[in-house]
Image 1 (tube, chains in turn purple, blue):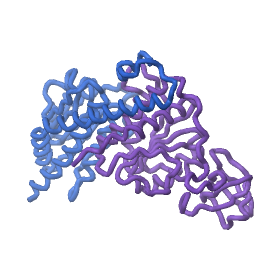
Image 2 (tube, one colour; image 1 turned 120 degrees about the vertical axis):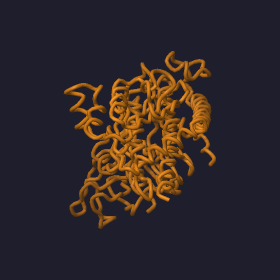
Image 3 (cartoon, chains in turn blue, cyan; image 1 turned 90 degrees about the vertical axis):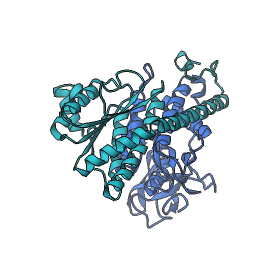
Image 4 (tube, one colour; image 1 turned 90 degrees about the horizontal axis):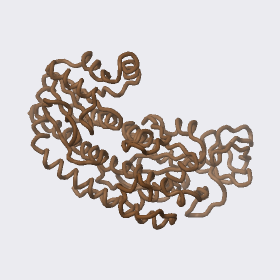
Length: 230
Length: 214
């Protein structure tokens, strides 16, 4: 079996994004839908580093069973989640699709096949290859930790965390992704980039709690069935 | 370049405020460390091939007599122990009865609070492990008092000990039945090589169980 090639440029870019987020006060959430052990190992690396003298950074492991329900209620806008999952994993895809509505940035350490084209478009994908075994995954998050610390020691690169894309980068649909919290008649409370807004649903009804919509100027202009390009 | 990462990134000679230049340096470093990790894992797995097979055979023999496997470690190694337990339970056709001693915060905090962290594994082994069972410990230092104490208990009670450890320190005590030592200085590279070894050990246990059954 050929060992997977190093996903080095993707890891470096993810580490810089993560360092910028920490610099802005973010918490790192760690989640693997199939193994809580990966989430815990990842979180403890950041919270209690093995190299003496390194900063303790806020990182929290989410149980494998957690996912959307835990992250939706726990994250703050500007936070980051590292997802360790196969690119085909339906629960990981669900998190990656909804995350922009919560203002959550996604770094996806993808085992197996990468996420399908057009899905998880806002996520940073670090593809570990179809042959990746557990040791490759552990190596990937060890390097993510190490590179993020190097970035944190270069204050000059930490400013200018870009506005996160909330429109579809493929078709440039105007508007922001929102997740409906509750709806009553035409009126709904929708979470957009981590902020609750009153939104008019009349163009997209029927539409209920948990559904994803594109919001423009307080009006939901499209409903996304099963994802950004459902 | 800060003093504290100077030793990790000798080629980053001066502070860089240019994200593109920094990213290029980081990618180069990540690629080198990835190769180092892959090379170390390959060498370690080759060097321990026979020991993996021998240990797996003994574990399989004990499993056939009704043994259970207990795995444990501290910090990141506790997660490695959890992963090993999950892999054991995923063995088919007959899952390996494996338990993590790191999985229950009620037990761990009760023992740590009431007695001390040195006994968090030994007390659980005293309650659960019988002669003939198997204890698997993960450690990078090989010197954690709670692991040394747990393995000493295992020796006194006929529990087979399998230890993953780093190159330095007491290597989990004077007499470990099957010891997998990873010769590396980086704690991260040691953990990655241990994970690769544990993957191979689980596979070898699965094969040995099938051979015993045949």
